[in-house]
Length: 268
Image 1: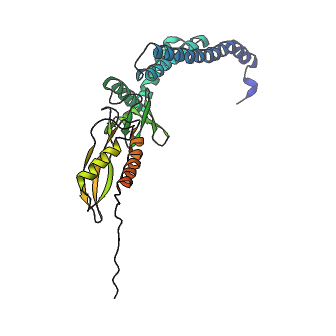
Image 2 (image 1 turned 180 degrees about the horizontal axis):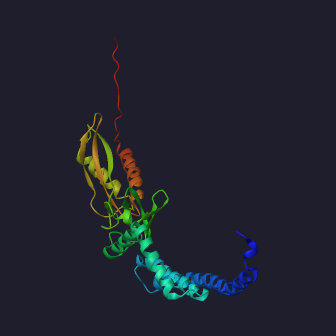
Image 3 (image 1 turned 60 degrees about the vertical axis):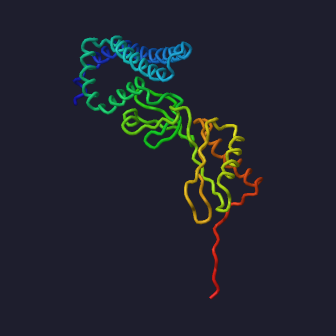
């Protein structure tokens, strides 16, 4: 390119003419996005105070944020001097291209709407979704955020979360705690059953529902009992561990000794 043929004065005049508009557009973007974030936070606080469904709050905040930011971009384009009609046509064309490329993302949005309408799970529920067991923190526009039982933050696209079997462990208000207790063959089942039942009454975290205590199977050395108390999703592990502690303590007080595997060695 022959630089001598470039009219530097005309180029400089063009830069000077557009610079204020471009700077103004950038300022509009910065201030506009800051105001959008402020408005989004205020809307979230207002919805929380007014008692709006806790599942809707993060979803609506995300949706409002996206809409307002698009309006800010359109406003900034107008400040720069881009014709709104031309810009709208450009956005429409870009929207079609982006929509085709983001069809999966749009399906996640639709799945999020369905979750909010039909509520297979809600914020705070203990769920088992796609093998992830944990509590639901948020249902966002595109994702469901879960804190797993081992403390990991799992961000799962809504379309994936709803594409398989979803188990809501909170929905019924109680969970069965599955325990197994070994009983010596020489002991009386009814006697041992009463001892276990009394031990479970000392587990303050368990629900008042009658526990199931039945013979499950006959092992080589002991009779294996199925012991099934009930707990809430919040007290499940407390009931699980404390039940074993109380049963062990009750067996010791009653003089019940669980047999261990033994092996006889014959002299040749």
